[in-house]
Image 1 (cartoon, rainbow, N blue to C red):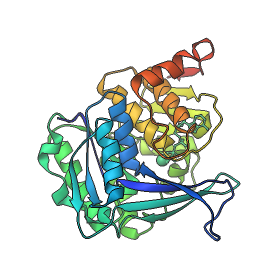
Image 2: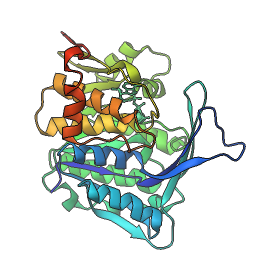
Image 3: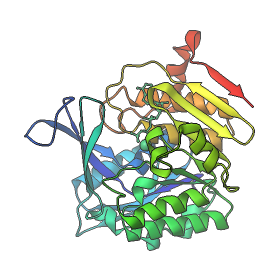
Length: 323
Ligand code: ATP
Ligand code: MG
């Protein structure tokens, strides 16, 4: 039984050890770190106390062992992750430019992860499900897009909510087919959780508030939660606008903060935590995530997150609600 279902790429990642490091000359990378956007999300939601299952495919190799062991140790159900003998587990490499931009090299579609398709989404995944979480980065080939459609149809049939983090990675979702699938997912989701950069993919010429207004014209969409990096997050539905300032921390590695934010927010929703509080907790989890090098090394348990917030209780970031 899983209250939250995710699917897609479970990987290992190698992280450049120096800002400004490029892929053009040999230098040290640290890893393998357990990774993959849906895996980071699922791990964090489980560590926050939700029951979570992930579907996907990894190789029968040491990297597959590493990611699955981490997920299982942290309480994620991995019984719907297939092990594939003839393709290796997916990998990602990330380097950070001096201006903060990231450069990725992904090996996902050609890896075991590329074998996921609709047959990997079995209806029993959705036993007790309240939210299906879809990540745009998981729409990397025809099979994965079919898996997303199968998952959303099953979620709809059972009356689960669908949350969508577009997590745009041009290296993964540059094809026409993937871009169509990103739009398709926006049409069917109940909760939309983009980053500021993701908004530009959908409406490159519009400002932030205009995009939010435009996407909320869809009757199916209940709310938008915008991830704003160090600035925090913004929740908008048809009645309320809630701006939750970020926690002040010194960022070491931004990768995974968005997935960690979403995992925390969804774990709060299944416990019926009020939105204001869910935003504070998700912001705190995102801030904790950037304190550690490695995509899911900064994930946090419920008590670690409680302690992080309690330690700042004298000076909590503001939460402003308006109509
Ligand atoms: P990614 O796709 O790399 O995982 P994202 O772009 O989807 O990330 P961000 O907005 O970078 O998402 O981060 C998610 C949340 O984490 C932010 O809304 C914020 O709450 C928190 N966060 C991120 N970076 C920082 C930071 N430097 N300081 C404090 N909080 C941060
Ligand atoms: Mg993201």
